[in-house]
Length: 150
Image (tube, rainbow, N blue to C red; front, side):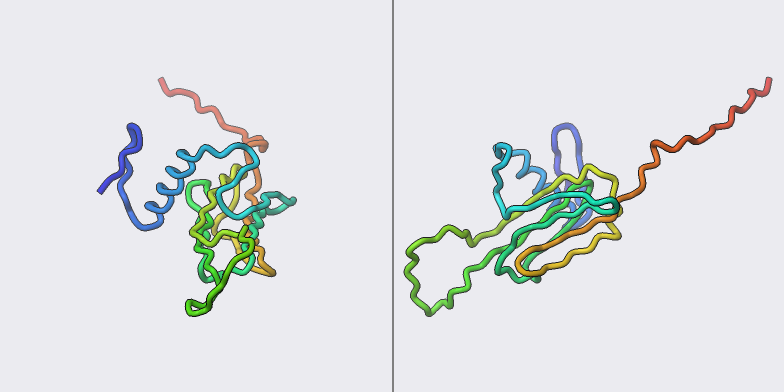
């Protein structure tokens, strides 16, 4: 099976690629303005050695959150469930928190090592850390010139 996106045909090699393509398509269809979000709030910053993403996920079970990095995109998705027992009757007076499936896709534009990534959930915040890869474009490399044999 293949998915055609414009003039590019991509063969499905697994579940990860399916999720990635779905996330990219949803991001393309989104009409989000700067500062608006469709999922949990997050901060993205860098230190001298790392790229760090902190995502607000209060009350969530980390086992119900999936974090995936593919082709420069970090995807964080899960289901935020209501904690009311099924047989318990609750009348909300105010309900501002949503309980639904969420997905955030963040483009990481800095060279990183995804295999060195780590994620920690503490006090309602998921922190994903990627070690940065040293930039090598500023390093001068002497290229020898071979003389053509005639």
